[in-house]
Image (cartoon, rainbow, N blue to C red):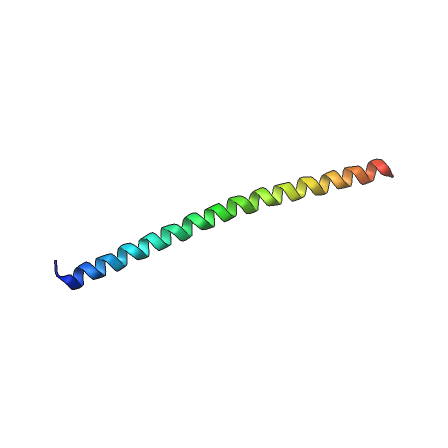
Length: 55
């Protein structure tokens, strides 16, 4: 394999690593977002329940 081929292969491998890193980050952020949405909805319904009991 020539030096140019090795450089091309290295660039392709680096692009794959970047893509995989971005994919993992998106998955992590999506999981955190889902957790936050559920927590906010629980908090909201708790406030609704509290308001109904006070009325």
